Length: 491
Ligand SMILES: Cc1cc2nc3c(=O)[nH]c(=O)nc-3n(C[C@H](O)[C@H](O)[C@H](O)COP(=O)(O)OP(=O)(O)OC[C@H]3O[C@@H](n4cnc5c(N)ncnc54)[C@H](O)[C@@H]3O)c2cc1C
Image (cartoon, rainbow, N blue to C red):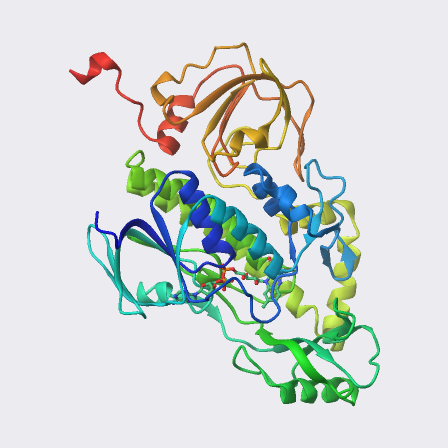
């Protein structure tokens, strides 16, 4: 292989690209990231928090404590002004974490560096062409690269998505907001108001401002003059705003790639879906896209699974993205201040205060209720595996500890040694364990105790055994490739 050839090239080293490249590296894939930014500085104001499922995903890789040490846990989800408290959910992390994107990228980047992922900084992908065997990429530096697969984690304006001709279906911006940290010569009124809010910034000198604009603004980088105009429109004064340390714009443009894959090209994160940030879902969805895709792409590159496994990435993650788009549009629409919207918000608030709707919405916003459609069966099938406390021959273990290396795990919770998966032993770790506590899933409630669980590297359940091993061989083959031939079969 020439030095400019890689098994996978990931374009974009933001949250999604870093997570994906780290997952591929863990699986031993030769992956290279191409990133336009010279370092990990995040321009403008972006994500301020991560949800419970992302915390679980980071826990599955043994790195969640790094994030928890730098943020504040909180119950931040709400709809129509009603708090959606997760504290009763059966999860090791029944909360969100307030942590700005700059910190998130710095901490994730630390893990990415430890894994030794290659990254080329300060260059852009400008063009590419795919053939049956791979993809030729052209960089802004004039350098060319070749890869077996290309993944676009290059944000909402994705060159990869556009180059692959993947339609980005949805709606244009109808509203825009400015978000800034700025000094003011007059003391503003602190608090939430229709169309936004003003609070003290962490530096103690500036004020954090989020305000809707009188007319839809365009471009990511607004001017201080535009911020002053928005302040005057809302407050009647600009409070002498000056010296912005951050100033950016976001809109309610909402779009989703109609396909997450075009042959050897895939898209993930904001490259696959953009939506207003209300509800705080973008970064979370991107990181979870990456964890769904990473192990599948690794297996296809290794030749353990057929290329068709990659279709399950779209099949599983597109519906999740579509639901996020719907949720964020709901949040954005409820911010309007006209009489009709106020009436809808008040009516909705009455519904959300009821136990069942509140539980369902909390499950959705936290990502803890995500279920991939793997067919009928035990309620655990297709859902995320809970972080159960197990008893093994080597002592106590947590399920998430078993997933640190991103390898599939077959848990035998019945009689020891009863599940024979020798033909997959090169790919799947098998563990006999005892787990006698009742099983409870977020939103679903108490379910019957399984006697065996096949866990994918992304933490989702691929097979559930109830006394027998019926269906296990099929699940192993579908997800982790055909059985290894026995020695005698080779002749
Ligand atoms: C105001 C605001 C608040 C938000 N709050 C939240 C929140 O609380 N929670 C949440 O989950 N999300 C939130 N989000 C959304 C979140 O910021 C994004 O969803 C997230 O950054 C997406 O990550 P990504 O890696 O997919 O894309 P990006 O972060 O956009 O990263 C793309 C990367 O690709 C690089 N790139 C682009 N084009 C090229 C190219 N041609 N060649 C090489 N490199 C390229 C870019 O430099 C960038 O590093 C918020 C967003 C905004 C604007």
